[in-house]
Image 1 (cartoon, rainbow, N blue to C red):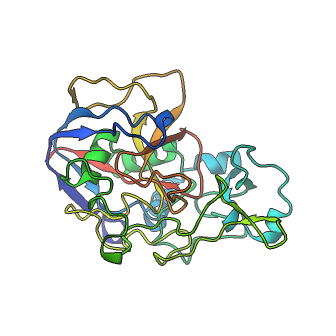
Image 2: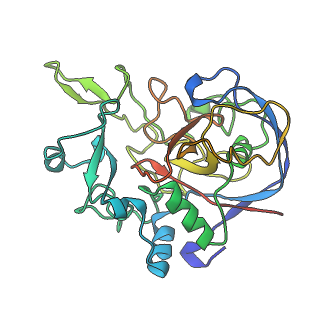
Length: 307
């Protein structure tokens, strides 16, 4: 789909029935539970997360303005914000103070107006909302995958496994995903310095990356050749968020038609996930954001129906 750097290399995923979800969820409020039988029709899904280069082609061709550009701000992880800019920011979200609202942060200026993507065209595009992702996929003649399609593809034909490749987080001492290494002992990303002062915890980068990794890095995670299904960036999927799931066999579920909320599902976890905090780099894990919001660790990939 497309040409040159813009080509969407896709994997064909045979339709079938699989067991979706998880009966022993880490975070019951996320609604992974219960395990339930789901049937999906054949489809294609991108091998890689959509890159900055690909998204730039869309914007150059259409003049599209993302939600972050319209609002003139987006949420940036504090570890990415230059110190002098950080000192000028006076507000953050009380529950997650390491997410800073940065004026002028958007997909092409990921840490604010003085930052640029020119040296990271092969990294996943971020600061894109569900609305932006939907518009991009549509422009390519594609669509966002449903949550069921995404999870079916991520599982790679394996039953009841935690990760796309199996159950071991680092099989044979090989890092298969870009996540956070190092402790997050206090329920977030702040640690304590030698004088007891608050400071950001350190990502030990044992997987080779502190923040984002190129979309084609670290090798395929399962037999379909899919990269970074877990880790790197969260990925928007089509479905509206709910924690109520039908338990009888669902065929090609699309999520609820309306929940009275603008929260959409995201899958796969990101470079900020680790076992202490945000243990969501698993195939059944899920979370949610508002459809018009973007962050430093949220991207997407596209899909299409049929064989």
